[in-house]
Image (cartoon, rainbow, N blue to C red; front, side, top):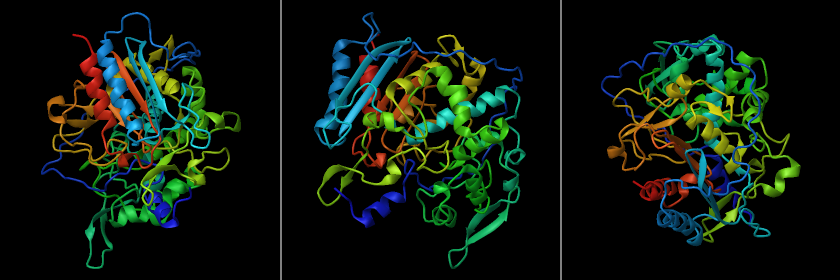
Length: 460
């Protein structure tokens, strides 16, 4: 079924990433962000390849610490999303103590032949690309390439003359002022630098992102040149707003390393971790495993595949290698990445990051009074109790969030409804894959339901 051009234009307004609001809430006083951890300058040796982890998603026969009744309730909650027509297919993975505790798949990946979801189904992960980009950047941090207090103009001099929008005039034009300081690398990695996104908001900054086609730039150099012409939403470090900052990080990885961003990811993360299906496109040989992405047809009231080339991820047909939203992946591939983080930067003898760097990334750096307005999947998740580290959301106060995830858990999601969290307290992680766009349109909280069921199933 082909959707109307008006409806597709509406979808295009939030295309590529999780729908994010331009809402901000400036605290009365905005204290400085947390100080930088000591930089580590030793060289990281070229890793071997971790190929044995999660080659199969079959649950371990040994005890994993979950009750069977509790896992059955998790299945029922996830399966109901398919049976009730909320999504067409769902696939989830629960891993504890390095062992698969539970794998679940239900529904279809493709409409034309009703092909089912399988272990090797390829999904658009959109903003779940962000943590991967953050890890790539922090690998360079470990090599001494930058400090978190460095101004971003050290690598992007095009941003030296950025202005800040302090308001709008009588006709809606932005009122501009000078930056009180250039955004730092820490601010860039915590969405406090002030950049817009263009996914939502009727302010001049986000409108300029849409009018100038920033996210559809053909390459990262063009992208940077466009961003350099658009003012910041607020003074750097004075607020939190979900932004294009991680796409900028991908450019910085490319600039520091001297390699195309995608090549750097392939050489330093994907190949070492055995993430064989994670990339910025889906090659022809793998397209049978690529899931449709579905949307709600407002006229028919049913889910239909999105018949639009922008969702096809064909080689040579995409634009810039976008660190904030551009990757596809599988459940097993993202499991390898997540287990590496659970293991403080190592997987099967392959070290990607040092433990202190992983700890730095999962530590909240936001001052009290800052609020998150997105979880990578949709807007206004729940501001209370959530913080932000370096390219991860962080649970700071579980009692305020309403989640059963313990403090210190970190997470994110993607625009097609995918989600994951990592719980270092209980040595576990969970990854959920669906394909509905926009992900924020799901009328139930799959993340909340899955978390509640997982922790209810966790034996005392």
